[in-house]
Figure (cartoon, rainbow, N blue to C red):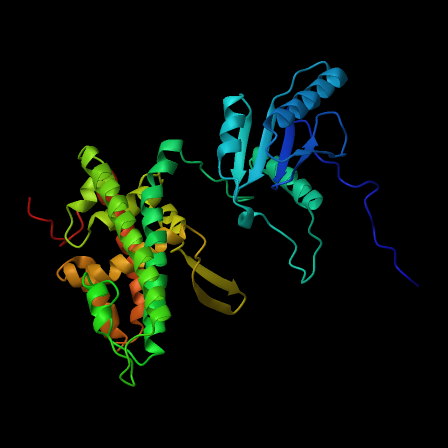
Length: 386
């Protein structure tokens, strides 16, 4: 005899008595999809679309949603909007805030999704999921998602300097490698395109079989030199802007304080300040998590292993900290952090240096955060002479 499974008489309804109109935005270049849930509207989620970047049309649709809710209930409800952090940046978020609308930007990777191998994904499904996530967040459910703290326009513009320099450096490396590759296929090695006498030395080069460089090859290399020299000038201009920004700030800023530590130069100080330390953190765990240096355990029953750092935070800050950790061991050999690193490596028989340097980077970030916020000097660290 088959046993019937007890089922609820009716599905659980969506709670919409929070006194607001909840809206999610799915943004693309061509279309913005608006998914909304209004009070006393039942479980139905309404969906509308406006043309991409049409802010006036977006605000007009919001006004229509508010008017419909007022006609049904006789009350005027506030609007609460959520969108994913992505290619559009934060300008839409700032526009909504300027209009008096409560706006939230969520980290899309923090939203729970189905773990099926194949799952349906459309803008309509994502819009509904964002509305449900916003409802749970406003109900106060812990860890339902991670909301992004939008930087101010000044903070966002300030970090452009370091990011542009990194792009220019990468582009310069590409052109240098192209010149070396062109010459290598002619049997020429050891040529450095970044030397100041690059053009004079080019005239002296001979191929592996003793011939002068072919004319078209020499012309191509000269055009690569033109690009390299332009990049060198742009890098100098960006570095001048960075140094001027550090000089104009007063001494209490994190960047100027970091410059006083041996082993930290203008580039590292600027990146640490602009990418991370300008923010407010409540504790050291938040600092490590923002840089993606927090541990990721995997525990279930008898299984208990460590998966490494999360890498879920700011990749530029994390990369800089790994580089700074190696330099810290060299320039601060008597600091407590370096002694801890050397002791840990010694216990491992000289192995696992790369793994241990990541742990040192996490400790170093927390120590620098304490230094720039509370003035706690790192134990054993050497400061630069004034």
